[in-house]
Length: 328
Ligand SMILES: C[S@@+](CC[C@H](N)C(=O)[O-])C[C@H]1O[C@@H](n2cnc3c(N)ncnc32)[C@H](O)[C@@H]1O
Image (cartoon, rainbow, N blue to C red):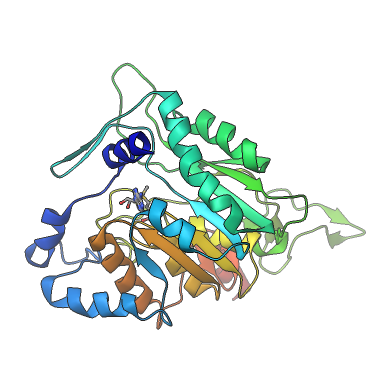
């Protein structure tokens, strides 16, 4: 366990307290909407986190907090753990390790989550191409493997002697064969390219808006990483987009269900859960990220919008306006 903990410490991404502390005075472009915490906000959001009625973001180490959670109560586990990468955040360096050590580390927290899940629960674990094999291996010990979603995240550093990495994988498992999948909630609305008709009537498409609701695939090319002009953006270095969480939460849970995120970061899972009327427990070891999550949760009390999800529909990029114009 000690080795696992030490490894974890090296792996932990995101200690950028120094940057965070100075954010209040950081000058940003006028259209930059990045959410930040300044010294005056911090106490307010610390108190907000203590109020468990508002949110259950637990500041702590997942290895210590998971065993305290209730058994068999969670409907969804979404985990976006540190990947097996060497990464620097401010002064901190995070070291890539061997595949075997990463497998052992994954197993050490996945095994703590297993008893917390309902028989009908779903599990999503994020990784890049290097950690994917380990995630598949460990997840398959405890769960039924259903799919691997590949998210084209567009942004990525160009390599000189390799292919630029612009994708992440999200491995989808379920505890049993009895699980929730709300297909209609995650269909993608696309412009009609092949307007087939049957007996003169449109086949599966809407004549007025010229769109079709299509089955969502495991290749997600319509979600950008949060960037500075988006209202959801924070300075967390690996923040997931709200739209990505919205697809997963809408597909795999129902209103009122309980969601677990053991590596909460800036709180994206918690925020989207709240916006969509689900309950959540999110664990994050870094206080500054917990405060960002608290601020986002407070914002979500008045603003439930999720970029890319409009009128309860995931629209193909740039197609909502076209469809709406046709309806005018
Ligand atoms: C990949 S980031 C998650 C980002 C998150 N999905 C978001 O949208 O902001 C992983 C997070 O796990 C946290 N973390 C690492 N080890 C942890 C541990 N043992 N317990 C709790 N949190 C941990 C890191 O501080 C980091 O914020």
